[in-house]
Image 1 (cartoon, rainbow, N blue to C red):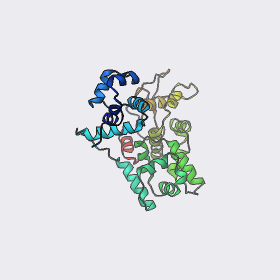
Image 2: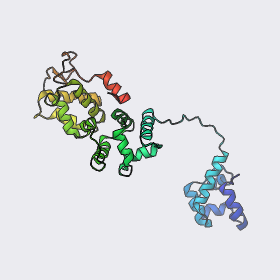
Image 3: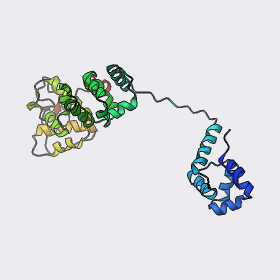
Image 4: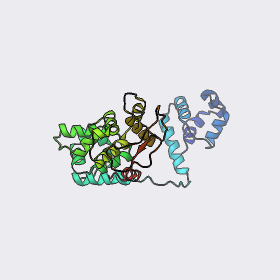
Length: 290
């Protein structure tokens, strides 16, 4: 049974020296109630108390705090109902895929380190990530873990240049454009996309990962942009932030994807029709699958 640190100090120093509680109050600048409660175990040693007693009696304060922690643990009989923290399904799935690819167990700490700067020291894992793991699995893990595209971009560039990796067309599409370029393509989509699925896939990846949402707001206010571009920017900004945007002109009906064959129906307050397919987008966000 661990002794209370006050008992230790009394038995080893204070009682043999004849030190009273009043003397301790004076030398330690502590109230009589504090000293009394330490003696009766109604109070534990804080960092400040341990340092004061340590300095007074030449005892390491770490020793007193360790004794206090041990004493508290042994004497705390309360039952605490805590729901275990479970590994997210998508994280576990990515760990399993990488473990199978490199034929060794990959733990959570290693996965975190891979995405946060240590990929240069883990070439086998980096190769497996881009060669053996479906992109939607990586995307879902990143969405769940709030990992931005900039992390993946650095990893991908190192994989291509230093490890002579094979290019991944979907990763290329997602990473090679910065946020501003991506928004330019999304908002002026009639100049960049011919296939609605191609556009939608690009849109979903970019909207899900876009961190600088104020860039969209800039498009809505830019008089040099066409009105359809400004309308689409206002619609997407509200879609992503749930904040309304005031346009300084009367919008006319436009499609989010200009070449969409969907009819011009359900035009919203920004005049945008055929907007984000919410069902498909939610599926993408929840599963990482497109």
